[in-house]
Length: 132
Image (cartoon, rainbow, N blue to C red; front, side, top):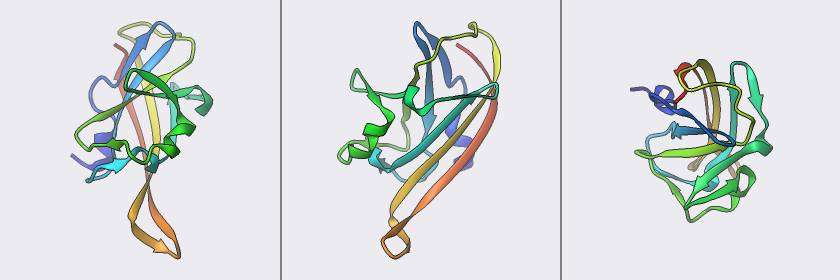
C-alpha cells in the first residue's frame, strides 16, 4: 500500500448526530507528534468543510484543529487513524456513496530542506466511499 493510499482506508466516514466523523491515517512511514499536522482540507461531494468546523477527537474531547500545533507531546502512530469530527449538518444518509477528498500536510521535523525549514509532506486523496 502506498503512503497516499493509506490515508483513506475502507469506511472512513460515518454519520453522527451533529455531523460526520472521519478517520484519517498518516501519510508517512514513522509516527509523528500531533503538532506536525499542518493542514487538513476535507470535501464531501465537492463541498469543502471549513477548518473552523474540523475537530480532532482525542481522549474523549473535541480539540479544535488549530490546537494541534500545541500538542507536541501527543503522537500520531502510523498504525492508528486520527478521528476528526466534521461539525456540519449531515445531509447524507447511511449507505450513501460520496466522493471524499482529503488534503493532508504533515511537517517532517527531522528532514531539513532549508535553513530552519523542515520538509512538509503533502498528500491529496480522493476516493468514493460509502457513508456508515
